Image (cartoon, rainbow, N blue to C red):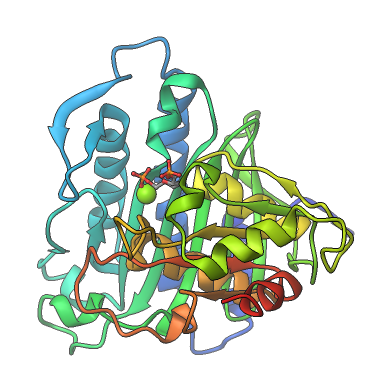
Length: 334
Ligand code: AHM
Ligand code: MG
């Protein structure tokens, strides 16, 4: 019988990838399925955000002192819930929670992975119907199985990631994830409620013509960053300037565009906040991993992001990520 079906769902793809490794246990495939499920639930709420009383500030402040939106809490609960009930995740850390959460039950204590995530990034954009996203990162636990995971399982350098990905809730909803073997993108097909392969083997172009940075902070940036931004606006920029400036203010959407079309995304430190705004573990590491697998680069302005040894869960870092050509151009100014 000749069954030649071209579309592949996320689950089919992860299972097929697993079959290439005779010793694989299927735990990663199951973890990604859990993440896909939580993403679909969050997507439903994001799509009706304007309709129900889920929109707007929840009236609490998160651990970084920022307003928490209701959807942030909903998204956080969905991801914690599916991962806790699944079989592959021993514990999580979330941008919305003060501390990591070891699931500490007989099944989870045997699980291989821990997961870190920003459940709803760019949530300041919810009220105005602008794309927002979820970012996640998966590490193999380093503590021995049989016991609850501890802080050391979460404080691993980004280069130890087993997988990382994001979901962008935009004009369509997409899940993109990377393992060392490649970066693949899946678009949610609402007719069957499945993420379906749409962007196989994503490679970031060596050059792009878009730079993405918060221009309002320009005078707060260090001289090198200002120099590069100014160079982007000139005709003689390496790739034929002036480049276009685009900044959605939802990192998931801004980096997604840079990944697909080529470009550079920057969130530099400022005079007031020398470490910038973005969190190393929940935001920088996953995107650095995805971008490197796709052929791009990511640094904190000095060092490769993936080499940084984290000291605490919520630490921040300046972040520069994108096409290799543009990263080299930037570095010539720093
Ligand atoms: P959040 O996690 O509180 O949503 O903040 C992260 C977001 C990123 O998605 C985005 O790139 C950045 O904040 C925008 O910040 P700013 O408005 O300072 O440029
Ligand atoms: Mg965030």
